[in-house]
Every structure is written in C-alpha cells, then in structure tokens.
Length: 370
Image (cartoon, rainbow, N blue to C red; front, side, top):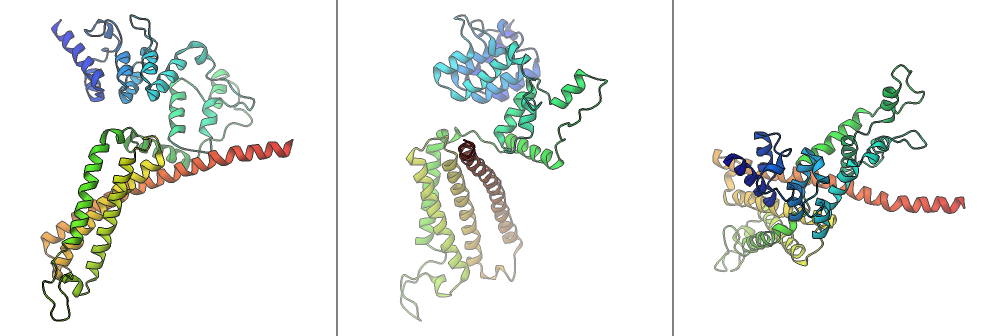
C-alpha cells in the first residue's frame, strides 16, 4: 500500500513539474501505471492529463498522449475534459494537441479517415506528395499514421487481395524523398527547440550579453601588450604597442572584438524590446547573434595567444597547439549548428514566400478564368 502511495506521489510531482524523465522512469518500472492511475493517490478527482493541461506543460502532454491517447476523453469529478482546463488557462499549444487527439478518438472521424477525394487520394497521399516539406508537414504525417490512415494504393490491395494493381498507382517516393524525411525527423528530434525558451532565459541572456559586451570593450581599452607610456622612437604615448609593429593579427583582433561588441549589443536590444516569442524571424536573428558573439570571443582569444607569442607559428609548442586546436573545434561546433539553423531559416523563408505567392497566383488565375 505504501509503495502504491509513493508511486502516486511521484507521478503527481512529475505532472506538476512537467518532468518527462520522471514519467519515463515510472512507465519503465510499471508499464500499466497509466492504466490504473485512478487507483493511485492524488488522482481520485482527475487524471494526470488534467493536471498537466492545467499547469501548461506541453512536452509532458505529448508524452501522455503518446502513451495513452484515451486520457484525452476522461472526465474529472466536475465532468470537465483536459481540453476545458487548457482552454480556460489559455494554453494554446496544449489545446491544439488535445483537440487533434480528441477528434481522432471519435469513431465517426476514424471511420472517415481513409476517405478518398475525387482523384482517389487519401489525406496521407496528399501529405506524402505535398511540394512543401517542413516540420509541420512531418507532424501532420505522424498524426495521420497514428490515426490509422493508409495510402490509397495500399487500401486497394487490402480491400481486393486478389485483384491486380491499379492502372495508375501512386508513384513510390524516391530515395531522396525518404532521405529528406529522415533529415527532417532527425532535426525535429534533436534540434527543434521550444520557442518558449526565450521567456525563461531572457534575464540570463541579457546578463550574458552584457558581460560579453564588457569583455569586448575592455579588450579594446586594454589590448594585449598595453600602450606606450612615452613618445619616443617614432611612437606616441597612448598608442597600442602591437599596432606599432603593424601586426596583421592585431588588426584582426580589433575587428573581431568590434564584431563581438556589436553582436552583444544587438542581443541585449532584442532581449529588452520584448518582441513576441512566436516571431520566428527575430528568434533566429537572436540565435545567430549569440553564435556570432561566442565565435568572436573564442576567435579573439586565439588571436591574443598568437599575438602574445610571436614564435608560435615557427615553434608551435604542444600546449599552445592543444589550446588553439580546442578553441578552433569549439568554433567549428558553433559554425555547424549555425549552418543547421541557417538551412532551417531558409526553408522557413521559402515556405513563407510560397504561402504568400500561392494565394496571389490562385486569385490571378481565377480572375483570368472569369
């Protein structure tokens, strides 16, 4: 009895905090925990999905729906669905997930899932051959597959096992289409981020950007080697010592620190203006400025090492070689992730452009037809 109470308490705490890892651990210990949740302490009045919908934990909601979709139709003591609670609290993303799952749970909707249009295509066929491939398309495809939707070609084979294949079967997807789907799924699993992160880390982001701006400013005001203290031998007091030797590395050092200062100021400005967290364009601008700041900071450090050790190119010491190598690896990682975000951003721009151009073309065609 005490063990059951402890399991119920842990599940309740996981629902309140939104810890998907705790839910995974509980399900791994007991695969039937969500099937007998009504007997656990803390869930006599409602289900875990009610608690999560009320608190607004989107990832936890998706995890529960994936493990037990029937939770979406369960009522609490006041005969309220989780959808009612999420709507009352204004959790839009959770309302969307619950609405889709609720509709897919209705029998009449399931029965109509494999209905074909006039061209003989099901909803899955349309998504499969849709010209625009993005994460949203992949999510819709997953939902249709979970709902039991099939391709029209497979449906014909199932309904008439002995009949020959249709005259014009759907063209099987090419290998590059499958590879693109795999890349999209890989991106969604490992690189897609919740746009709500900005609201949580806005204060920390401002602090970090302020520190990097201070570092860039001090790096210019106190450059490696310092300043001349007198005016002799062709130099003047207050000039940078390294500048007198016309070192190309010192010029690059100044450029990189200037770029770091500007990128940090842009980050602070974007974080302070309070732009909508669902504005993908500004979020990507913010992400790129952070990458630029980090890369410039590491690059300035590498150039400082090279400037302060002029023999580093001739006699590359092992310690300096390892240090510079690690810093270049870090810059490579930042560049790789930045390139991934750049491809995602370009795909988003392309989809936006198509969504703006397509209605215009349709309207123009209708006008010519009329």
